[in-house]
Amino acid sequence: MILIGKTLIKISTVYFVIGTLIGYYMSIVHNYDLTPVHVHINLLGWTALTLAGILYHLFPKLAAAKLGKIHFWLHNIGLPLMMAGLFLMIAFQLESLTTVIAGGATLTTAGVLIFALNVWMHLNEEDAA
Ligand code: HEM
Image (tube, rainbow, N blue to C red; front, side, top):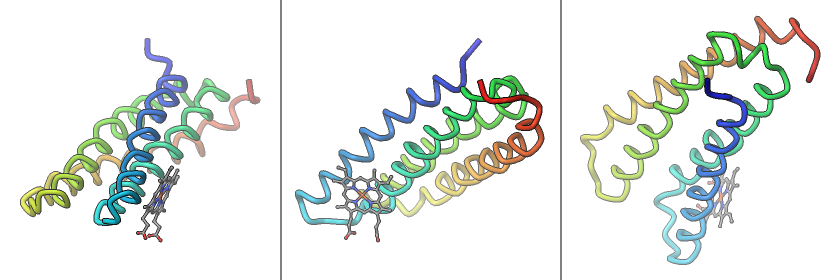
């Protein structure tokens, strides 16, 4: 069984490293084309996933709920697709990747909606750990 809270926190640190390296790269070469990738990796990958991971850890019923697992997979499939697509589109002018980006964005957005639904449905069922 995957402990989704701790796993999300570990995954989020990978996004933090990648997001920071992209920011560092942009500040060294003075080219800010990758700002949209940097921003979304840092905010949806690092901050949002860390916060979600902490909530899943604090409130185990959120992690145990089916909605928690669905959010976990939607976010972890959708965000890499969206970020890889956006990166390749910007770096190599691959406009054909808009479908991949939109597909990843749709999965990620669905994941966020399901995360919010899970919190509203199950948070009151328990006290903080
Ligand atoms: C050492 C770490 C970081 C470096 C070197 C860095 C560097 C940069 C650079 C060079 C830009 C582009 C600025 C421009 O377009 O003029 C930028 C934009 C941005 N960064 Fe970072 N960044 C870092 C960490 C973070 C983190 C942790 C977050 C969020 C959690 C973040 C959020 C943003 C946002 C929202 C923007 C867009 C700002 C705007 O366009 O107005 N950055 N960053």
